[in-house]
Amino acid sequence: MPTADYVVHIVDDEEPVRKSLAFMLTMNGFAVRVHESATAFLKFAPGTRNALLISDLRMPDIGGLELIRSLAAQKIRMPVIFITGHGDVAMAVEAMKAGAVDFIEKPFDDTTIIEAIERAAKLLVEKPTEVTEVQEVLSRLQSLSDRERQVLLAVVAGLPNKSIAYDLDISPRTVEVHRANVMAKMRARSLPQLVRMTMAAGFDKE
Image (cartoon, rainbow, N blue to C red; front, side, top):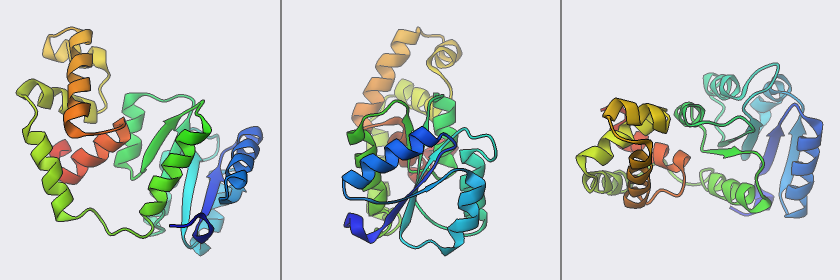
Protein backbone atom coordinates (compact mmCIF):
# COMPACT_ATOMS: atom_id res chain seq x y z
CA MET A 1 0.00 0.00 0.00
CA PRO A 2 1.46 3.44 -0.94
CA THR A 3 2.51 5.50 2.09
CA ALA A 4 0.09 8.25 1.09
CA ASP A 5 -2.85 5.87 1.57
CA TYR A 6 -2.49 5.39 5.33
CA VAL A 7 -1.50 7.26 8.49
CA VAL A 8 1.08 6.16 11.03
CA HIS A 9 -0.02 7.08 14.56
CA ILE A 10 2.71 7.34 17.19
CA VAL A 11 1.85 6.97 20.89
CA ASP A 12 4.72 7.60 23.29
CA ASP A 13 4.83 9.53 26.55
CA GLU A 14 8.37 10.79 25.80
CA GLU A 15 8.19 13.91 23.64
CA PRO A 16 11.73 13.59 22.18
CA VAL A 17 10.90 10.05 20.99
CA ARG A 18 7.63 11.19 19.41
CA LYS A 19 9.24 14.12 17.64
CA SER A 20 12.32 12.33 16.36
CA LEU A 21 10.35 9.32 15.11
CA ALA A 22 7.70 11.53 13.50
CA PHE A 23 10.36 13.65 11.80
CA MET A 24 12.21 10.62 10.43
CA LEU A 25 9.04 9.01 9.11
CA THR A 26 7.79 12.25 7.57
CA MET A 27 11.12 12.69 5.79
CA ASN A 28 10.66 9.18 4.40
CA GLY A 29 7.27 9.99 2.93
CA PHE A 30 4.91 8.72 5.64
CA ALA A 31 1.82 10.57 6.85
CA VAL A 32 2.20 10.81 10.64
CA ARG A 33 0.18 11.90 13.67
CA VAL A 34 1.55 11.92 17.21
CA HIS A 35 -0.28 11.36 20.51
CA GLU A 36 1.22 12.01 23.94
CA SER A 37 -0.62 9.19 25.70
CA ALA A 38 -2.72 6.09 25.16
CA THR A 39 -5.67 7.90 26.72
CA ALA A 40 -5.41 10.68 24.13
CA PHE A 41 -5.19 8.18 21.29
CA LEU A 42 -8.18 6.15 22.50
CA LYS A 43 -10.31 9.31 22.28
CA PHE A 44 -9.12 9.84 18.72
CA ALA A 45 -9.08 6.23 17.49
CA PRO A 46 -12.79 5.63 16.70
CA GLY A 47 -12.60 7.97 13.70
CA THR A 48 -9.45 6.53 12.16
CA ARG A 49 -9.33 4.89 8.74
CA ASN A 50 -6.40 3.14 7.06
CA ALA A 51 -4.26 3.63 10.13
CA LEU A 52 -1.52 1.74 11.86
CA LEU A 53 -0.13 2.35 15.31
CA ILE A 54 3.36 2.53 16.77
CA SER A 55 3.10 2.50 20.54
CA ASP A 56 5.50 2.40 23.44
CA LEU A 57 4.82 -0.65 25.57
CA ARG A 58 5.35 0.95 28.97
CA MET A 59 3.61 4.27 29.60
CA PRO A 60 2.43 5.92 32.83
CA ASP A 61 -1.29 6.27 32.08
CA ILE A 62 -2.24 3.21 30.03
CA GLY A 63 0.36 0.70 28.88
CA GLY A 64 0.63 -0.64 25.37
CA LEU A 65 -0.97 -4.00 26.14
CA GLU A 66 -3.97 -2.35 27.76
CA LEU A 67 -4.18 0.00 24.78
CA ILE A 68 -4.30 -2.78 22.20
CA ARG A 69 -6.89 -4.66 24.25
CA SER A 70 -9.04 -1.51 24.51
CA LEU A 71 -8.88 -1.09 20.73
CA ALA A 72 -9.95 -4.71 20.27
CA ALA A 73 -12.82 -4.29 22.74
CA GLN A 74 -14.05 -1.30 20.69
CA LYS A 75 -13.64 -3.34 17.49
CA ILE A 76 -11.12 -0.81 16.18
CA ARG A 77 -8.84 -2.78 13.88
CA MET A 78 -5.39 -1.54 13.00
CA PRO A 79 -1.94 -3.11 12.88
CA VAL A 80 0.07 -2.33 16.02
CA ILE A 81 3.85 -2.18 16.33
CA PHE A 82 5.22 -2.03 19.86
CA ILE A 83 8.50 -0.34 20.71
CA THR A 84 10.13 -0.65 24.10
CA GLY A 85 13.36 -0.09 25.96
CA HIS A 86 12.57 -2.92 28.37
CA GLY A 87 11.98 -5.87 26.10
CA ASP A 88 12.19 -9.52 27.00
CA VAL A 89 10.93 -12.77 25.55
CA ALA A 90 7.88 -13.04 27.80
CA MET A 91 6.82 -9.48 27.04
CA ALA A 92 7.27 -9.97 23.30
CA VAL A 93 5.16 -13.13 23.35
CA GLU A 94 2.43 -11.47 25.41
CA ALA A 95 2.37 -8.52 23.01
CA MET A 96 2.06 -10.79 19.98
CA LYS A 97 -0.70 -12.85 21.58
CA ALA A 98 -2.54 -9.60 22.33
CA GLY A 99 -2.54 -8.88 18.61
CA ALA A 100 0.60 -6.85 17.91
CA VAL A 101 2.19 -7.41 14.51
CA ASP A 102 5.72 -6.51 15.59
CA PHE A 103 7.82 -5.86 18.67
CA ILE A 104 10.93 -3.68 18.39
CA GLU A 105 13.43 -2.91 21.11
CA LYS A 106 14.95 0.54 21.54
CA PRO A 107 17.30 1.77 20.28
CA PHE A 108 16.40 0.82 16.73
CA ASP A 109 17.65 2.10 13.40
CA ASP A 110 15.50 3.82 10.79
CA THR A 111 15.49 0.81 8.47
CA THR A 112 14.12 -1.51 11.15
CA ILE A 113 11.10 0.65 11.93
CA ILE A 114 10.41 1.49 8.27
CA GLU A 115 10.45 -2.19 7.29
CA ALA A 116 8.13 -2.99 10.21
CA ILE A 117 5.71 -0.29 9.05
CA GLU A 118 5.77 -1.58 5.48
CA ARG A 119 5.00 -5.12 6.69
CA ALA A 120 2.18 -3.83 8.91
CA ALA A 121 0.72 -1.72 6.10
CA LYS A 122 0.24 -4.84 3.97
CA LEU A 123 -2.23 -6.07 6.59
CA LEU A 124 -4.50 -3.13 5.76
CA VAL A 125 -5.24 -4.68 2.39
CA GLU A 126 -4.42 -8.38 2.79
CA LYS A 127 -6.93 -11.01 3.78
CA PRO A 128 -6.48 -12.97 7.02
CA THR A 129 -4.04 -15.87 6.98
CA GLU A 130 -4.96 -18.22 4.14
CA VAL A 131 -5.31 -21.99 4.56
CA THR A 132 -2.31 -22.54 2.29
CA GLU A 133 -0.13 -20.39 4.55
CA VAL A 134 -1.18 -22.41 7.59
CA GLN A 135 -0.38 -25.60 5.72
CA GLU A 136 3.10 -24.27 4.95
CA VAL A 137 3.67 -23.51 8.63
CA LEU A 138 2.44 -26.98 9.61
CA SER A 139 4.83 -28.50 7.08
CA ARG A 140 7.73 -26.57 8.61
CA LEU A 141 6.68 -27.66 12.10
CA GLN A 142 6.85 -31.28 10.98
CA SER A 143 10.49 -30.76 10.00
CA LEU A 144 11.43 -29.99 13.63
CA SER A 145 12.96 -32.63 15.86
CA ASP A 146 11.19 -33.54 19.10
CA ARG A 147 13.67 -31.44 21.08
CA GLU A 148 13.24 -28.48 18.74
CA ARG A 149 9.46 -28.70 19.15
CA GLN A 150 9.92 -28.68 22.94
CA VAL A 151 12.11 -25.60 22.70
CA LEU A 152 9.64 -23.89 20.35
CA LEU A 153 6.73 -24.51 22.71
CA ALA A 154 8.77 -23.07 25.58
CA VAL A 155 9.77 -20.02 23.54
CA VAL A 156 6.20 -19.19 22.48
CA ALA A 157 5.17 -19.63 26.13
CA GLY A 158 7.52 -16.74 26.89
CA LEU A 159 10.19 -18.65 28.78
CA PRO A 160 13.79 -17.35 28.73
CA ASN A 161 16.68 -19.59 27.70
CA LYS A 162 17.79 -20.31 31.26
CA SER A 163 14.33 -21.55 32.26
CA ILE A 164 14.06 -23.68 29.13
CA ALA A 165 17.49 -25.17 29.84
CA TYR A 166 16.49 -26.01 33.42
CA ASP A 167 13.15 -27.54 32.42
CA LEU A 168 14.69 -29.68 29.67
CA ASP A 169 17.85 -30.48 31.64
CA ILE A 170 20.16 -29.13 28.93
CA SER A 171 22.65 -26.26 28.85
CA PRO A 172 21.63 -22.69 27.90
CA ARG A 173 24.07 -22.92 24.99
CA THR A 174 22.25 -26.00 23.70
CA VAL A 175 18.97 -24.10 23.95
CA GLU A 176 20.48 -21.32 21.83
CA VAL A 177 21.50 -23.85 19.19
CA HIS A 178 18.03 -25.38 19.11
CA ARG A 179 16.42 -21.91 18.92
CA ALA A 180 18.63 -21.02 15.96
CA ASN A 181 17.65 -24.28 14.24
CA VAL A 182 13.97 -23.59 14.91
CA MET A 183 14.23 -20.07 13.43
CA ALA A 184 15.96 -21.43 10.34
CA LYS A 185 13.57 -24.35 9.76
CA MET A 186 10.50 -22.17 10.38
CA ARG A 187 11.96 -19.44 8.13
CA ALA A 188 11.23 -16.84 10.80
CA ARG A 189 13.15 -13.57 10.67
CA SER A 190 12.25 -12.56 14.21
CA LEU A 191 10.63 -13.77 17.43
CA PRO A 192 7.37 -11.87 16.69
CA GLN A 193 7.12 -13.57 13.30
CA LEU A 194 7.79 -16.97 14.89
CA VAL A 195 5.04 -16.37 17.45
CA ARG A 196 2.60 -15.26 14.73
CA MET A 197 3.31 -18.38 12.68
CA THR A 198 2.83 -20.79 15.57
CA MET A 199 -0.36 -19.05 16.68
CA ALA A 200 -1.78 -19.22 13.14
CA ALA A 201 -1.10 -22.95 13.09
CA GLY A 202 -2.46 -23.47 16.60
CA PHE A 203 0.87 -24.88 17.78
CA ASP A 204 0.98 -22.57 20.80
CA LYS A 205 -2.03 -24.46 22.23
CA GLU A 206 -0.37 -27.88 22.16
